[in-house]
Image (cartoon, rainbow, N blue to C red):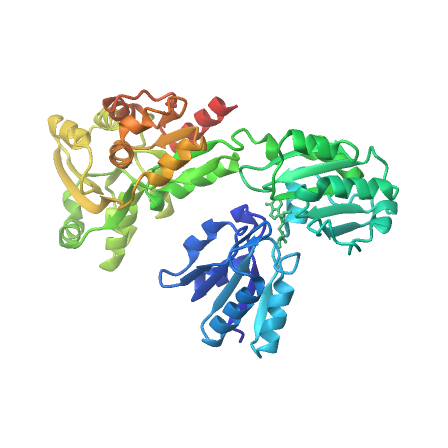
Length: 502
Ligand code: SAH
């Protein structure tokens, strides 16, 4: 089997990476990557993976191509798994062909993992099908990066000028006036539609449609920059009708997510689905306890309790892990009453075959107590599996109501060792419009890493808080959330963000 892979990373949207590419990123020992490949993918590399950046940006190469080739060959000889990751498709204007030839000459086996090329993906995300029966029967992928001083162009302008093919130019922004002129000089009508799509498929995608005669001037007026795909042909006229991505309500809106990475994926995914540019800034980390003796004891004595109240998905997760560890399962709960503090916790229970007896309408401790009292919890023995450090409201109020409460830590949250530098830089750049808080601890930890006095310098950045308890904590730092949903859940929070952005 080959140990070297030329891998396409797709156009930027993480969802546009192939399953095969992800598999190789996860298993490689050496990663050699480019400027355009979404750097987010690197988080899938093994911790011990050697990660080498050889990026190219426009013409200025960090490493010249022959040195890149040498590096790939040298690393491949080690027999380790080498992933050569490139933006889009490795064989479409990616010089993957040259790298492949070098490998063959060095006698090294390799495989290619095609990627979704920007020339197809960026138009699709801009509502432009590169072929369409009403407009064209063919599509050409063309480099726009020709040296304009070259006497003989490698591009056959007279053919492109005469054909009705959709033309897709890569690396063409700098040469746009030359491209438009050559096409018109060779017969393409000046009113032929032209589209420019910048950062296609990413949350910062922008685009516009013009005509061959006006496009160069319009791009100049907009100070248009690379990386962009240029599309020429009648299909560009479908942009208004078929455009979908740029209609997303949160497109381009920068949102900071402070939740623990282990818990954040739901929130991150929905926000991305709405087009937001998510800045993951986990301030806490969920960790197992150093020992589970107490949990084991509690499980073995579970029959003592009449109620178990789960306050988080993690509480459910770590409790069941321990249950499994000692060879037991959900049946241990038998006829016991079970409560979940919110819908996500309730779903975590359902996944384990438990339909909770009680889920409050409002997802804060105070309402849980009220609902539980209505269900006659007074005087009961109550077990609360939860984080090592958490709010005391629920146990205290249940105790006041005459319950015999046992708080059982099943996991702990720790402060992530990080700095706020990246977030402050993004704030400075104007890249952030919202900061989301989903618990008091995320607020406290955020302001531990980002000085409140520094944050105060960006009054336009809105704080979104999941509910009243978190809001109180935000206020303690001298800020007032602009957003707090009526329903204290992640979907509730996102719905309010979307409304605010729209
Ligand atoms: N192998 C890549 C292309 C590399 S050449 C592929 O298959 O997509 C680099 C050029 O690709 C850029 O100058 C730009 O024209 C285009 N490009 C790459 N990613 C892009 C994106 N997300 N949006 C618009 N153009 C992109």
